[in-house]
Length: 148
Image: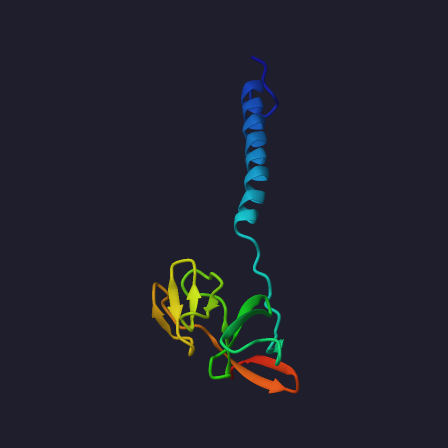
């Protein structure tokens, strides 16, 4: 068997080359998969207030989903003609909640979680209340902003 200057045989050199090639192929395949499964965190846009609706747009006892930064919010006009706003992200599995007019509460369809009109969880698996937003009316616009 022919030897190289450093004492390695041709077969061990080819084995090393083959293992290195397979290792490089595995790394080149696995790295993009891992990056796809764990995407980078997107920076949150710093948005403290948003125009959620116009005053004549919502009838009493109705709800509307609006965009608040990168997440949804929900604006509710109660039977008593009061506006309330919350994060529309359920505290259980981050599903989008909706206003259920017939019951007068906020409902998460994923696992039947319910919240009252102060944002407190009243049934189902949600472990915490919804984040409550401030609501202000300026002219024809309903402005929703984060508390504090």
